[in-house]
Length: 76
Image (cartoon, helix red, strand yellow):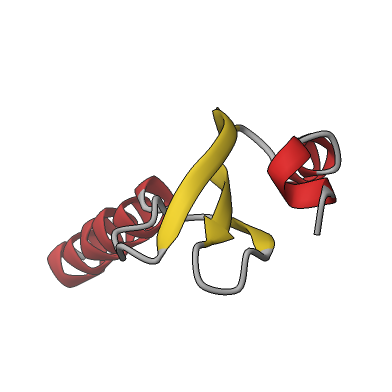
């Protein structure tokens, strides 16, 4: 009985950690060398990628829709 409770508690702890890491932020970024825009789920840290537009979006669809209206993304 104790083993079952311990195993259940450990499974719950690991599964909740996985759900906590699920991304809920999307960014429209532009590659400064190719001038191409893309949607990513992590804030860029490379110096060749810059965030453009209104910053953080809650869904990928919102980011993709906004990307169509960003001037630097549509001029290419």
